[in-house]
Length: 114
Length: 112
Image 1: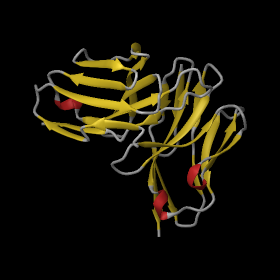
Image 2 (image 1 turned 45 degrees about the vertical axis):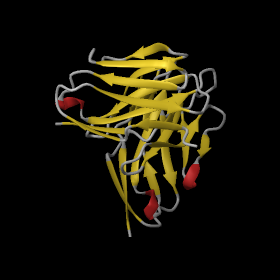
Image 3 (image 1 turned 90 degrees about the horizontal axis):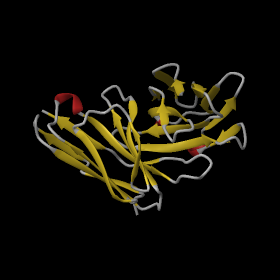
C-alpha cells in the first residue's frame, strides 16, 4: 500500500543512453513533482504537473522530458544521459486546494551514469 | 520568492541530549513551513508542518518546531536524542507558486 512509488530504485547506465523513471501515487492527489538531489544532498524541484498539466518547469535541460498520462502517474524520460545527471530523483505528490498542500515523497531513484 | 537557510550542515549530539536544528526562512507571502527527515538511502518523510494554526507544532518521533515570525525562524527540537534519530533533516518553505524550496540539509549524528 505504498503511497508514492518509483521504479526503478537503482539505475546504472552509460553516457549517451536514454532512460525513463516511473512514478505512481495512490493517494488520489492531483499534483505531482520531480525533484533532483545532488551528491551534496541538495534538493531542487525540476517539474510539477497539476491534473496532467505542466505548472512548474524549472531550468532543466531539454533532454529531460516529463510525461503525465493521468493524475496518478508522472514519468521522467532522459535523453543522451550525461555524467552530471547522476543523482537521486524523487517523485512527490500533493493535493491542491488544501491549506498547506503537503508533499509526500517516493523512495527515490538512484541514477548513476558511467 | 522564498528561501531557506539551515545553520549548520552537521550537528552532533550525545544520546539523551537536546537536539536543536536551526532553520530560517524568507518568504514574500505568509509561509507554509515543513521539516522532512531522510534516513540513509531512503526517501523524505514528513516530520511536521506549520500551517498558521499554532506556532508550536508537534510532529512524529517526539520532534517539535516553533514558528517565530519576528525571527523568521522555524527551529526543530527534540528533548532527548535517540540513536535512531541519526539522519539528514531538511527544512522547506512553500510559497504561493506550489514550489517547495528546501534548505541544504543538516546531518544529525547521535553518539552513544
